[in-house]
Length: 296
Image (cartoon, rainbow, N blue to C red; front, side, top):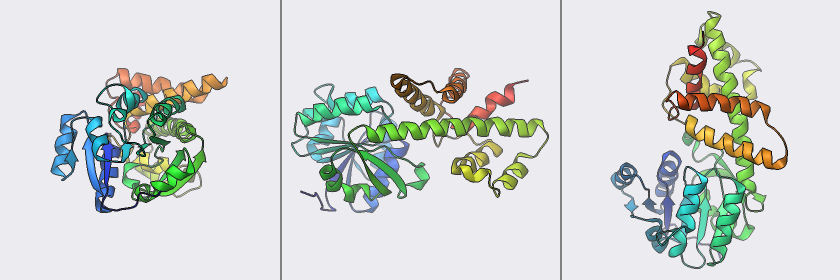
């Protein structure tokens, strides 16, 4: 049965960059928004925005039948879902649906879903393809049963325009990791060529303006997003190096289990490792250029 009242309450666990824009769009669409985050500053912000906040995932589960996760890594997702007496499954009622928009591996999703199914709770992996500014136009590759997807489509449509059922649980996660492996490669080469551009005494803005109107840059919209940040030395995070490092690591683990080696991704991950050691892992992925600029 489709859960369809627009006055219903939606739980958001994780009020970071993506969780916040999801919550905002749900609120604009008339849903009640319930928020939990382990970070006190995130809770204060949620309260300022008028959202109801709770002190544990359990309390979210007691008050919402549809729960959206937006969390930073697989361990935190699993902890929130089933780890202890304050987890979602300690209180979620039969028929509830957990929508995990986090970027995690397929194995984590499958394990979490098995735990949820034991309580009569549905579970979907629904990672996000899109930058925060593109909310409303995101693509969601969703793994899980069609009936559950359709029952929450009205919720998903508040923040995504392209909702794709991709098959079994974990398939959405796999697609997202493949996407982010490509992101990592494009990010690395973009930073590399801009560094060389400056060494060749070519104005970076001139370079960008010239090739962004050519066929070469149309290979990736990401180039057109990264380049202005590099030119302006604006490394405020849209997607942090730490998050990219985590995602590429998950993708490389997936490849290893599949029996292949990702040479390009390994090279990019070395840059991510170095950036983290240099202390700018919390900055935008475009900050990788600082590594090249330091090289003599």
